[in-house]
Length: 420
Image 1 (cartoon, rainbow, N blue to C red):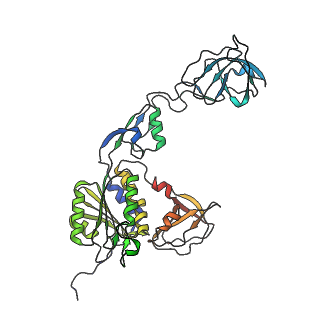
Image 2 (image 1 turned 60 degrees about the horizontal axis):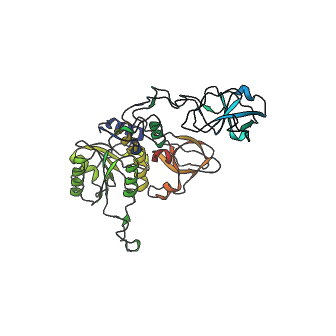
Image 3 (image 1 turned 90 degrees about the horizontal axis):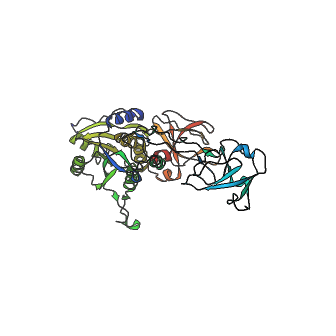
């Protein structure tokens, strides 16, 4: 008999508690840099952006048509002399009574005009020379005051706070920054992330043909989606490849990675098997602060520190690895960059299937929206079935111990909100 103390598994930690503890450790300390607004998509803004100008600076037309005085065309069929032509980027003169100005989208409204009639509600008539140089126009539909006029400052007023520190920049945010003259933005530095996989069974696609795979070997799918997820989150990724299932090799890989990275992300090797060395290696080199979640799929998740580097140990099963990254590592990385909003917003939706199998853990069911406005369930909810994450467009967040029936309202988290 062995005299070694028996292994005692700690109680499973609720997901919300684990996330709170993770985020408490994600203190933004990465520093900042100034980058071109062209290159700032997906980065976290490190400084408020305040407008130094009014947008738009003057009243302008939102349509191609004719700028008019509403008093001159109160009745259908009014005919006005076209006294001037105002393209976008030029300024017309005051609009004389009884005349119209041919105007184009974005052009400044001339003084005296109080409406724009879009081209489709008019008919151009031939001119007669002289003051009729631009012809005449018949106004078929009388306009109301202010029609098709974009008012000065209706988008942004001078001095407005247009983007807040802590926002994750989107393409539309970049456009807004450019509209107030920002050619560069102050953003958080990219987190330096080391990615490594563990497992002697792992093989890289391209190295071994499918027909030549040895019994027990599998392709390393985790490495591909993990690298893509980290890149989407603005990280600078060091792909350290596959680490053998050996304690010494695992310790050395983690030790080296911790020297030059802010975060180490591992997949596999965090369970309790004899070939699972990540947890023990983190404890040997630093500290393990949480392990084992009340979550399905995704129970064997670990977090710890080695020196100044954070370490997240994700499960080896691909769906477990995918979901624990999205629900735990993603908000951790965003918080590390100073982002203010990191939590996904569930959408209440109707389940179009029965789920009678209540689990003692909080469960995330892969599902997708159907044409009837409800949710369908993927037939196989195994943690190894990566197909479910491609077929589905989100997960149903199911509390521990809860079952439901078709027609019940459930909380759906779209992948679109987690992959942005």
